[in-house]
Image 1 (tube, one colour):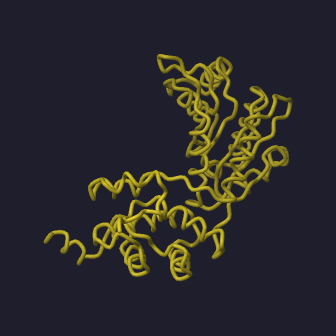
Image 2 (tube, rainbow, N blue to C red):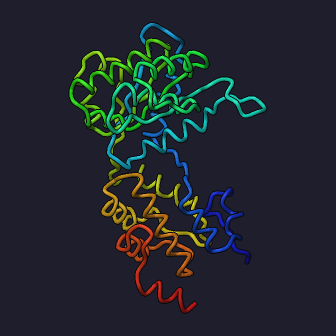
Image 3 (cartoon, one colour):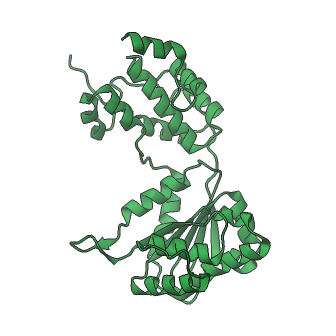
Length: 302
């Protein structure tokens, strides 16, 4: 009876014919698996993108613990809303401008990030005022529909005055361009923004909580497992697997998916071609990109 691969997403079937190392590389490539919190966050961002210009544009703060999946959600949103380019690859219409809050924020660094994000080289030797004028000219030339600012918790690296100044710049840009802003950060970013009532009223908070043992987590793990190019099915929905993932990940999305990818790599190298509880425990004990000594010996003898 021919082997079937119903345990995999059909788009993964062709990867099973690749070499061992090619399949292992694919394990660590970004993968999108929808779940309720991510879908709601994307829906809110979509609403902001389509919001008609007005004097007080709504904005959003997407916050949660590090490695909870904020970047994964934004990556998905940016992929779904690419800029419109001409035949020479030049941007004709900009949907989304994405940048990071500088590690030590001030006006000059923020505007330099904007200039770089628009595809130009920021003249870092210029004064902050000059950078602001240049950034605003470039923004008005091809205004984005929405701006995403990652790592806004970096605000806390500055003084209270610098924090308020950087937040006021985000509010100014939103007003000047009639453009919504989506800010990403940890819970500390929420505290920084709530310190200013005007900013707090502008940026509606949206929390991404840690996972807990639930049917939703089981569905997420099973869906992610369907994207791992393993020849045999794995018991991803088993209670013991879910509990072990929770123990070693702390409910963080990024750690859950990394642990599954590492366990899948062990499954490929050990020829089991599936993930079981023992492999999951070994992968968790080994750490990122490290495997037990006996496995290295087996590979050397192979």
